[in-house]
Length: 293
Ligand SMILES: Nc1ncnc2c1ncn2[C@@H]1O[C@H](COP(=O)(O)OP(=O)(O)OP(=O)(O)O)[C@@H](O)[C@H]1O
Image (cartoon, rainbow, N blue to C red):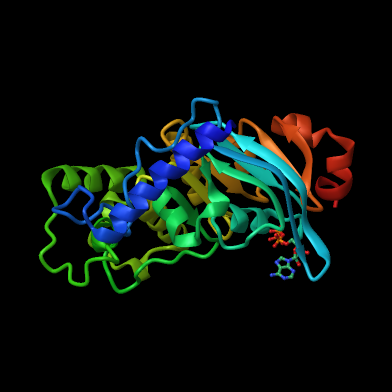
């Protein structure tokens, strides 16, 4: 990461942020930005160095307790990375750092080669194209599946009233395609509150995908799902791999076995082991702190 690259990246992002503030950016849907108020920054994430996410030497302490301890990790564009580790390993805190919820005491956190995430606040990081899915589904229960996805397209915090919003044909096509991707094409008119837990999770993932995130962080996505829902979620994630970069925190080993390429094991706030699931599962240190519990 050269100072030049850093400077160029920071300048580009700052220009876009300034444009957002003055509402002069050309976006889809008649001046509103597509997605939940997020700018489209398709050309802004420089992955020429082969990394969409890069953490180096990150430290965070809470009241003297080191939750993240010299953590270094990187993810390639289009990769589906699984993160496992015992309770308290620092998985959630790591995601909090990437998304700007928690500020590290020291270290480096980059989105691509040029965007220093530590310069930005949580909403700006979402605008840059990092989506996050928490463990519990959060959809608009009173609205239909279709309306939830439509809302994900049209909601724009800068535009107070969105009553004049009308889907373009490209957006309608995209929405229809999304319904298939998230296995909800047959439930388009159902109220979200009446969906199963797994279907709500898919719907929320669909809402995030409508914003076309570059990187999606997912915290225990299959917790509480039936076996069938878990299988379909695995299919969904495998279909997203390559188009999006994904970081998935999970405890469900059979799910990880189905979806993973590289698995990172976190323990005591840093990387304990990394490799294929078979490799980390046969690592004595991993068995001792996590798998052999
Ligand atoms: N805001 C906070 N204040 C104090 N301690 C915290 C805070 N956030 C996290 N911790 C501590 O940091 C450590 C790492 O927590 P974290 O939630 O990141 O772990 P985790 O790997 O996500 O665990 P789990 O699998 O149980 O969700 C834990 O010991 C936790 O108690």
